[in-house]
Image (tube, rainbow, N blue to C red):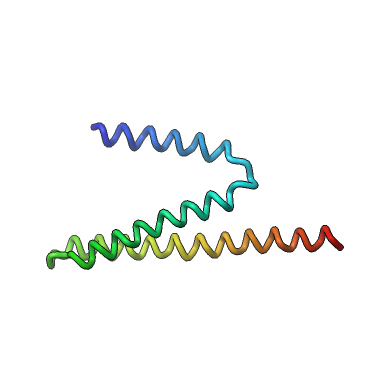
Length: 95
């Protein structure tokens, strides 16, 4: 019951924080979030390495690895695109 309470409170807290972040800070915050996904990837690799032969731990570890990699790769692509948009904006201002 306590875990459900913490989960619900974290949802409301996350929504409140996201709505109050200025647009200039979205790229650095997104990069920080992507870095935390790397921790999930390391955890997934550890789960896969220490799987005791049960199919459930292997499947869960593989899913965590795939989802973590999708988040990291997609996040870096979006961050790179946003940074390129800022760079082109600076070039137009100097002309």
